[in-house]
Image (cartoon, rainbow, N blue to C red; front, side, top):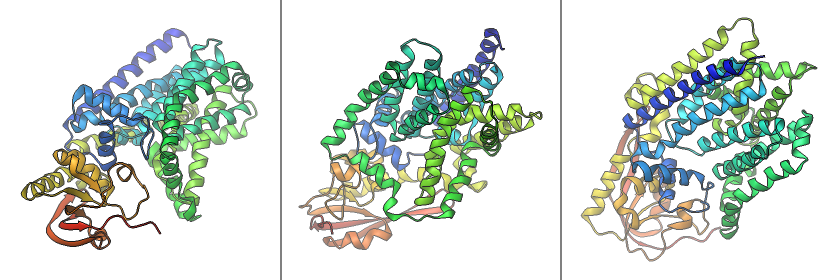
Length: 492
C-alpha cells in the first residue's frame, strides 16, 4: 500500500506538469493568428446578452465566455482562454479519480494526469472554446465526488456531486450519461447501491435538478428549442443504419484518445469482463466509461455521430487505460503512448501559431473554419459604408455569427434570412429578417444564391469575396445589393 508521502510526491509532479502544459497552451492561444470559428463567434455573441438558455445549447458556455472577456477583453485568445484553464483543472481531477479507484497506485494517478493532458482530442480542444470543455470538467468533478461519497459519510461529497452534475447539464445535455453510468454501477458495486438508494443519493439528484431548473424554465417559456435542437442533431428521422458510419466513428475514437491508450482501454474491458474477482473502483470506472461509447456507437450506426460526442467516456477511460498499460510487464506502451500523444500536441501547438505549417504537413483542412473571417468582415464593413443599407443579411448562420464579431459596428443592422417562419437556430429566433426591408446588403454562398435571391424584387452582384483557407481551399461569398424583400415564405 502506498504511503501518503508517495502520493504527495507524485501529486507535486502532476501539478507541475498540469501548470506547465496549461501555461504553454495559454501562450499558444495568445500568439495564434487563427480567428474564431463560427460556433465560437456565436458563443461570444450569446455572452453579450446573458440568459438562462439559448437555442442550441445550455447557457454555461456563454457564461464562461462572458467571464473571460470581462477579465481580459474581446480578443480571440480571451474568448478561448477558459479552455486550457479548465482542461488543466480536469487533468488534476483525473489524479483524484485514479487515486480513489486505484488507492495503492500513486504512479497510476500521476500517469492519468499526464495521459489526459496529452490526449489528442484534448490537445485540439484546448485551442478553442466549446461546450465539451466545461462538460468534461464537471463530469470529472462529479465522478471524483461520487467516488469520495462511496467511502465517506460526509455530506459535502454528495452536495458537491449534485452541484457538479447540475452544472455539467448546464454545459451540455450529454451530462445525462452520468446518470446512466450510475445506474450501471448499481449492478456492479454494493457500495453504489447503498449510496444511490439513500438520502445522500436523493440529495445528489435534487441538487442537480435545482441547478438545471432555470434552464428548464427558460426552455418551457420558449417552446423547448434546446431540447428540440438536441433531438434534431440525433437525426433519427433520417436513419441510415450504416456500418460505414459506425466504423468511421469507431476509428475516430483512436484519434481522439490516442491509438495506444485505446488499445489499453479495450484490453481493460476484456480483462474486466473475463475476471471473476474485480476491484470495485475499476468496476465503477467501467460503468461510467462504457455507456457513452455504446450510445454513440449506436448513434453512429443509426444516423451519424461526431468523434467528440463520446468525449465524456474518457474521463473514466483514462485511468482504466493507464492502469491496464501499467499492468503489462513491458512498460514501453505507456511511454510510447505519452510520446506519440505528446508529439501530436506539439504539432498542434506549432500549427496554431504558424497555420501554414499545417498545410505543409497535409492537415490544413482541420483549420479551415478558423481562417479568412477577418478579411470577410473587413470587406463587408467597407461595402456597407459605401451605400446606405437598411440591413446586412445572410442566409447562413456561420456568416451571421462571424459578421457579429468581425463587423461589430454593423451589429444592429445584421439579420438572418429564413426561408420560412420556423426557428432553426438562435439567430432565426432573435434576429430574423422581416418585411419590409427595402434595401439590403445580401451575403450568400454560391450554392444558396438562387433560392435566396428569388425572395427579393431585384438584386445586383456587387463583389465576390474569395478567401484562401486551410487545406489550399477557398471560401466564396457573394455580395448583392438587393431591394424589396417579400417576407418569409410560409412553411410547407
